[in-house]
Image (cartoon, rainbow, N blue to C red; front, side):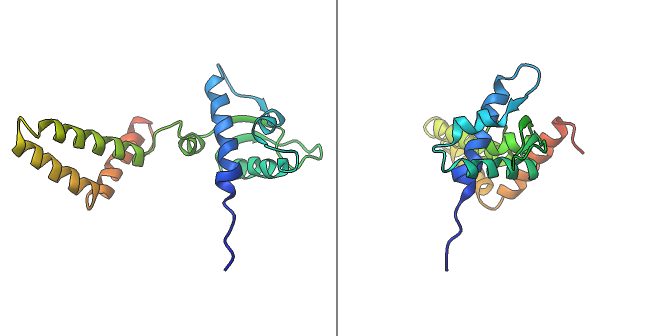
Length: 155
């Protein structure tokens, strides 16, 4: 069986990260020529079309907001913004899984700090972390997702 090439890691993700970096530098709004982004990420003229296709995929799948103009180019002319989905995928915006991971790491660290002064509390906290990291992980992710959604004003 032939494996499918991972175009996300090779092309889409580097383009998305380059766009996220530019979005962070934008003061009021983003309006970047895609050719500038392509010049930044493409490693050779022979591979440029693969990055062009990545911009099309990112736009069509809701990672970026782009402006297409019918001037004969197969990819959008300008990138106007990056969506929440794009920011999360680029690592520029927290997602529930990352928040849960950070919470569990902090709880584990606290349990280790308590190990000498309060071993019984440390053991209880380690048990709770074990549960949340295993069987309770989905519940914790759902709780974090709900809290983040409410804070963002989402239904």
